Image 1 (cartoon, rainbow, N blue to C red):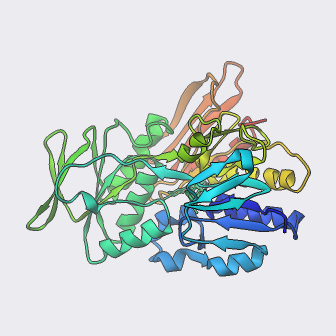
Image 2: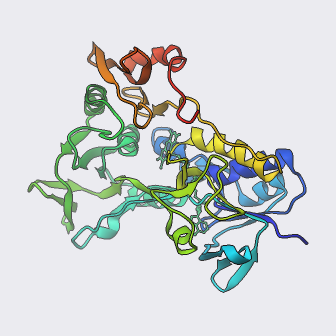
Length: 382
Ligand SMILES: Cc1cc2nc3c(=O)[nH]c(=O)nc-3n(C[C@H](O)[C@H](O)[C@H](O)COP(=O)(O)OP(=O)(O)OC[C@H]3O[C@@H](n4cnc5c(N)ncnc54)[C@H](O)[C@@H]3O)c2cc1C
């Protein structure tokens, strides 16, 4: 039998690529390998689970066996790739070698962890996949107070969701505003005020130094001297594309695994997409770009080399207390921001000298304008 097309990862990137490929090629052997349990789920739903009262099983959409059948593929679960040997077109699972025709890296990004002192550091939970989510839900059962580390998009979404699920939330982050790298300060203030109206308490500036057990749960000692009582901690301080195995195999890496517009790495027959990939300089940790990549790469793998292009890709942030849609200006674009609106309903627009819209952030009622504004936005990868 000829060597299969091998996809590493059964997240949205891996499974969507497999689906798109099967629309074009029903026969070529296809093998998916994943370190986790291989269930199909939509990761964005992880930050809506408490509000919707859904546990991990409730968020799972299909078992790996069902996926294997649908995709006419083999799905190997709880199997971790330990190395790639590009010269011999094979990869390693411990001592076992697996040959590939083409290898696709869809192995995602991992949560950034910082060391925490104290005797309760194991009660810091990352939530970056369905199994993390199951572990956190089990630990959170019967508890009341969550300390959230990180005020980025994911931290804010979890804050809103945990409050909807009945938890008290303290949010700690060493920045001046929420979503500092993504959002204009006026829109960030509206989102923060929305979350505060639900009861969220923000501690912006300090970091968590030490987490200790106390008579009544945990004590979080912050770098500014504050002590916050809580029952458990969620860490949402950022994600880093997985690049180590690619770098060890001699593939070019930068922030992510470096690929061109055809999703090709620096080595023949190896491709990457999704959170791990840096596509023509862009590493975007969102679903829309990975769907575009899956469609283009499926064509290439089926024998029709195709470059990916990205149109405008606004991000809808799931903070229902203060709806937010944001489209940051493309890299390198120089523009001037203008702010309209007040309270929860903020519209900030970024335009260049000729008046061309480069980016926006819309909160509250202003999100209604997104469709009209999207028509004016530039493509991210034309
Ligand atoms: C809480 C949360 C909310 C989000 N909300 C949104 C949203 O609203 N909109 C949006 O666009 N994006 C959102 N995102 C981002 C979006 O979910 C991701 O961009 C997307 O799911 C990434 O998919 P992926 O397949 O690249 O990676 P992952 O889903 O991380 O999949 C990686 C896969 O690789 C496997 N793997 C890793 N290493 C190995 C190895 N060595 N061997 C074998 N297998 C391995 C893993 O087990 C897994 O199967 C959110 C993310 C989070 C965490």
